[in-house]
Image (cartoon, rainbow, N blue to C red; front, side, top):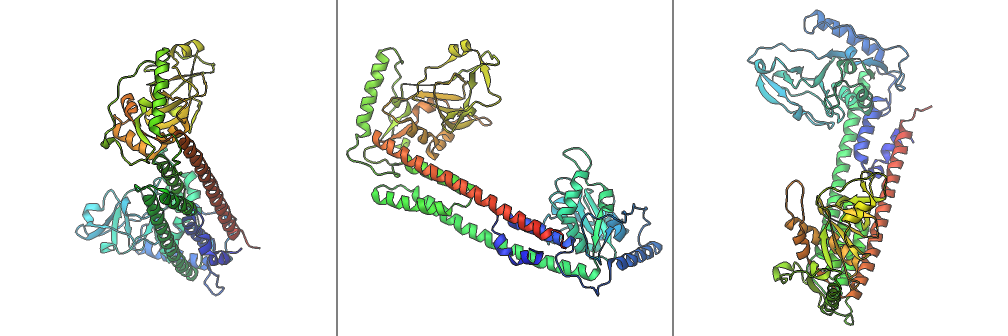
Length: 567
């Protein structure tokens, strides 16, 4: 595929991720390689143009209009970073213009001042300026005049392509930030010079040569002035600039159309999610919800869409909107009576201590209505015990399989041992370990709030940022996990947490947390349906990743082929 064929398929390729910014860079790359427009054998050659430039520069210097320049190192005759058309030639900015020129004018002249913030990284953005007296800005700043081309030399401005042609300057001259390199082209189209300065080749070649400290690197004057500059005939420069302007305008239209498509899709997704999250109940709503979930799966084209879809699924689940209710299920009120009986027996056997009475759940504690067989209960009333980990530091021992874990070790239902997780001796673990069972749920309550894991007989000591509670067998721990992962718990945690830099959710807030409890049989149905829909989200994420990867590879292949040297 040649560049012309690529540009014919512009619309199709624009749907690839990050395609339009990459196509913009690609256009600039084609332009400076002589592959964007046809060459005309009748054009004056670049070699003849260089002769005229040298003569004109000499005239300006001899006439006192420009300062005499220092000699600059010439490029080797065989220097070819890439192949150029036959009527082009390799040159340098120092050869085709004046580097960092100075202006001379009356102090009272109104002139332009341009700070770095007014220099655009995008191609085609007109320069903006402030008006100041020349006498105020002539010292300590970089000088420029109408038609000059400026390049931001400091990182990350250089890497972002901050450069522009200076036009419309008050008094035809100006000054600006010292973090600029300026070239005053002679007989060369300044817009073509700008295309070169914004091209991926010039920027990528310059980054490794930047000097200075890591946070304050700069493009050296030597690179700006003396790096190879692909010089076409003047007539072709004008054709290149016109074509780049045309294609950048096409990119603008494609970008606007893409933004509008995404905006419409976002509005549709948001409307569907809002509708699903409205208070409603009944089988008709559940059928409606299933229909919208199916449609949402087709609308998910970005990772954030899938994250929103997961949150909506959890919200529907804990509100009783995800699966049908069965009138034959044992209601939650009967279920809690059996749980309380089991709690009393465990306390009588001395396994757990009696807990303090909890305040009743008032209307203000009930953020949404529940189905008939469901009921609100505070978390502490549903569990045998609830506590947090060690408030302090254990004695560490290296090389053991006993770990001191915190909230950051709780990841998607599992205790995950990380490379920096500390270890303790078996005796230290036994000294600090909590009474936990296979029905224990762990929740992060400090820093990151709401990470959930199940205890699975791991040799661990809990830190204070991990809360634990032991559930009876009459409550599905997987359902409780989904409640904790839902937006409902996240909002509760934000409201109840203390601290500013590091958020902390106290044990009192965990004890008092109102849990929407369905019948046990419905808990199981909800967990199964959530798992099914989360697996769908996993597949959607995988398909999205695959599609984006394939689109990028296609774009890479097409761009590579279009840039490949022609025989």
